[in-house]
Image (cartoon, rainbow, N blue to C red; front, side, top):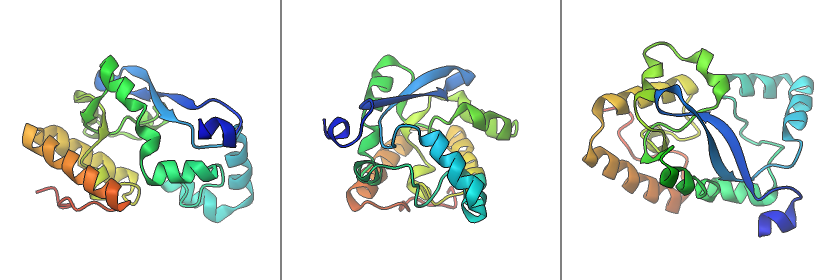
Length: 181
């Protein structure tokens, strides 16, 4: 309700993502950005070369000007991802697995990195507990492939536990073993 009151637009944002087997699906999140965010991003990137470089590295901005004030809180607390429980119920996602990425990332995958699509995407994953937003995209892909190669109930339990700890501490860097052992 606060999303609707504080910023015009829908409460839920849906975006096309890539799932298991390369299938596309709509991934749900609480909306954290202002309406017209793509135009705002384009304008910022056109006028600021440092921001453009930051964007081209990971397709993220540390201080994203498109975020609403409530959106900053929702993202920091990871509450923006709660609607993905509907994706889990629908069978598009799992609680644990590689995060579902945007269609635009497909050309960036090597054949090995595309193995991340051998399992369902997850609400949280090995990359999220080993650097979350701080890890470079290529490193996240490596974490995802490592997860696919080492998937187990115990690993999933560890990831869920570390995710809970990180969310409660509001940390971007997890306490997982970043060396993938």
